[in-house]
Image 1 (tube, rainbow, N blue to C red):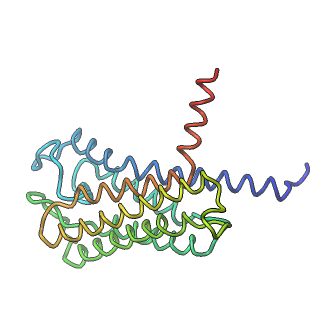
Image 2: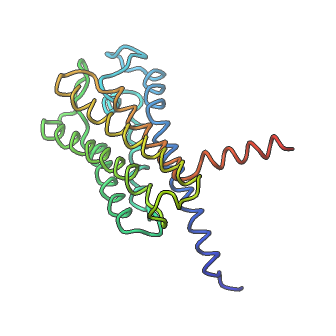
Image 3: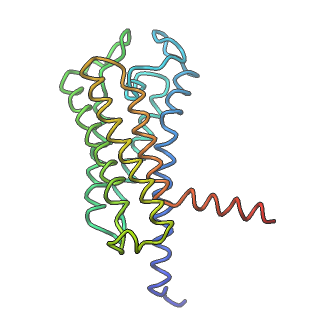
Length: 230
């Protein structure tokens, strides 16, 4: 058996990275819909079925708890093992920070919705840890979209391939939407208003940035063209 050439190993690593990014993107994009759907299909007695809760984290106390916990644990695992662009140290550091933040969000839940009894072990410190974890998690996603995903071996934007420039622009827009969602949620939280919509916007924006970085849309468009050409 002949050993793999460096070129072949690099290609295999790149394909693995793209699949990794797409998995994170798909999980993040589906999360708001899965939470809403499972909570509606498995209603909690004291909550109005198919009624939006105040935050995505509040779905921890609904029939969607398995989705909430499962997806966040999966995201934390993917972030822990993410190697990044050319095995870059900054990607790995931000990924591990995001991993710890995701685990904090799921292990230290938010306060229970009105009418739902919280666990006996829940206290204010638990809620503070949850909010801190959520802020750090979204901040790490913003760093990926605004900075790390837009890095290139070509420092000048004009030297980059057109497809790379388009993906950079898409990640920039996603990063801005993540920051807008965070600020919106922060102001809403201070006013004691629901934050589920800005949270969903930030979550789906982070997901799209990972799908863009993983070239999922490019691959889908290429597959569609091949089907049409048959």
